[in-house]
Structure formats: structure tokens, C-alpha cells
Image (tube, rainbow, N blue to C red; front, side):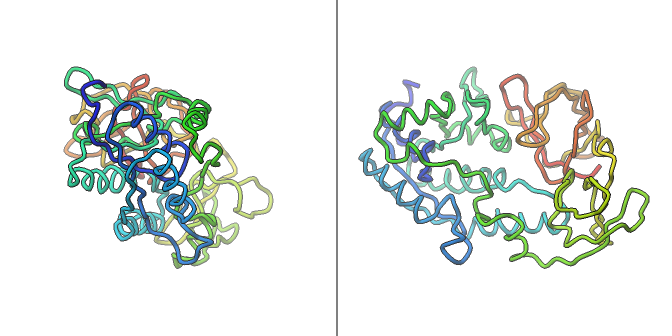
Length: 357
């Protein structure tokens, strides 16, 4: 990285340990570091503040910047976040899908708006605390999994392009979480013991509470695979494919198999094997290197963040932008709206949005 030393980099500082250590590492390496705290949309009332940009997290980020002796700014992306992340999330839920807002936020906000803002301020790079790595070689930039297998966040970055990656740094991607916490102590940062935040950032009180507040839902029938009415659901928005808890039917267990939005029906099964499928379709596919490989193409693929990547073959529907994946073994609860991400060993090749086939 000698060729990029002394370049200006704006670090997205959430107030957590990962982004704080990212800023410290970059300063140690000789970069001209500027800290930026991003203000996202938050629900009314302090008790429901967005965890990524709460008053507490802003104060922590400010303290870290002061400790490091770097400039610190607030970038307000509240309107854009509400429109491009929150509103789109609610629309997807309303249409019966289960979206991943972190994927959208990374594309539209962190590596969209923030990058544009940084370039307008004549910065050379932006940096985040994501657990992912980059390999620059032979005129291409490969996006790689983070060193820490338990914290790897490459799954959420499949929509990035070569142009974006050329301006991005992931300083903590080559470390494990315990190593990052040790670095925070080494740099004497006041965030070494900051706890993890696992929930959706704009729904800190829980997703069902959030949906009840912002979506109009209505009860409807629960039916089995033969169409027989066996109960009542409280609103389709509160269920996702593969769900077992919360269905509240006697004689279970039951699993959510599908949704009929037009008829407001929740389709369930008692046979968990019904959830397993070997084939799926994806839209809005992005290839990180900029173009599709020659098809059919073998990859390993993940259909959800915490799922294990399994071998699959990708083909494309003729005269369409849809891609078909055929898995080596059936996958449980392939869920429309979620991301399917393609890998080759440790490299992320791209991904797409799962749709009903």
C-alpha cells in the first residue's frame, strides 16, 4: 500500500470498535485521516434511536476522533436513508418479500452517498470497519472474505463495482474481532469494550414492533399445502419463509412455506422437507468484475448471511436478465427478497436478489 500513503481518506465512524480501529490503523500507516459520522433516519423518541447514529454512538465517535487528533464531521443522510433504505424495506415487506436492508444501505448510502461526498471533498478514499478484504492486482480489484470467519461481512457487499472498490479501504478485514479489540486497547481508544449491535439499526425495539408501527396489516387465513384453512395469522408482514415460532397453531410444529399476498393467505406445512429446494432464480445480478462469466458457471453460493456456501451452477434465462442457480444439494427456506451471493474460494464474485421462480 506504499503508493497510497499520505492520501486523504474519510473514515465512516459509527462509534463502534471496528470503525474506530480502522481510523487508528490508517493514521498509523500515514494516511491523512478524516472522521465522518453518518446520520441516518431514526424513529421519533430517543428510546428508539437508530443504533448506527444514536447520540451515544456519535459521542463515542467524537471522542475517538479527538483521541486520534483527526478532524471530525457529521454527514446528514437522514432523508436519503429514509427513502432508499427504510421506505424500500417497508415496500418489500408489504409485497411479501424479506429484504436485507444492510445490502441496500451499503450500496446506496455508505458506498454511494458517502463516496460521492468524499470525492467532492477531494478525498482519495473512503474506509469503513467492514470485515472484508481487497486484493489489487493485474488491473482488477478482488473483493475477499474477511480473515475472521465469524465476522466476515463480504456477503453484504456484493453490489459493489470496480469503480467503487478502487476508492475503498477495509483496514480491519485482515484481523479477527479479538485482535481488533486488542488494537483498540493498544491505541487507547475509549471503545475497546463497546458491545456488538446485531438488530436492524432502524428498528432497535424489534422488527415486529417496527412493522406494527409503520405498516397497515390485516389478519387472514392460515392454510395448509392442500388449501385447507387451519387457523388465523396476524398479518403477513410478520412472517418469513421457514419460520417456525409465532405461528400459534395446535398440533405443530408448523413451518411457513409461502405467502399469497392477493388472497392474504399464509401457507404452512408440517413437513420440514417441503422447505428444501435445489433450484432458485435471481434478479438484479451484479458481477463485481463488471461482466458475467461464460455460462453455465460453477460457484459456491450463500442464500442468507449465516448460511454455509454450497456448490451451485449458474445459468441464465434466454432473453432475460434472470439467472437460475442449481444447487448441489437442496437448500432450506430460499426466501424472496434475500440476497444470494456467489463465491469462488475466498473471493466474492457477485450476487443477486432472490425471486419467486
